[in-house]
Image (tube, rainbow, N blue to C red; front, side):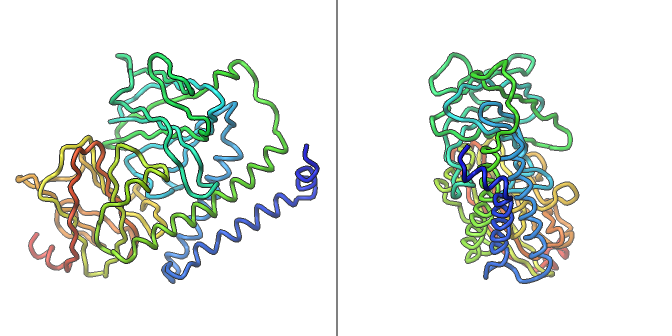
Length: 369
């Protein structure tokens, strides 16, 4: 073992470095543009605590490239970068040096995709695309079972490219109704270590993984803070996002993204309007807080999609973000927030249509309801 690493472990210096890095990450909550009130700041501190939990799970606990396991990088109480309430996420640490087999049972989800990623938020805020396969091309047997080989060289059947600098396998499942659908069951194994037993804890590996976990917290918080800062000048509008940038930070290549900031007074509502919907596999809109975390979709209607939204008879659509019930269809709740971010997605749309936005007095809506 490297003598410096051994000394860091024996003296506790590695733990001190980890704690100091978390303390430094707190500066991202105190940025000049962040809302200076107790509610939003409290969510900021909770956001960092959640990133800390995800970082430890991802880098310290969730397997190695030689013996990978899946962990959940975003869920009801850990949220990163406009996590989609209609998606189930899984991630596994892998490497382009090895070959892997993924086995699964599709369940009832609308679609599922697998993508290999390069880079990593802990290394500076990118998660670049590698290989990609989804249910449009995935071979699935009549019982819903499938198998995928991940490798550098193509193989027969379902194959997912694993470039030499691959660091992660990311899985996205799309639900039309998360409460009623059965998620896919998925496992992964490294073919090059099949039948072997994982070794005991490697002290040198823990040394590096604690550093990666701390870097993940600060770099992720900084990256999302930078995004939000860019959205602020266009508050209550919904312009298309930079799609190439979205792909560089882990976005789904089938999705056309919109990101923006919203802020409403107690007596205001934000309308999102379309005269018609484009042909697509799926769409959704979600309401997030300042830290780009989806609001609590367990208890509030903060997301609508192609399954849950109600169209007018002429095919047009209006969604209403408001602090209280506007008395109309398609109410998106603010869940106690005065401001935050918002994300719209088209999946599989050949020609995305851009939603219009306008702010109105809530009384105008309730009077006409």
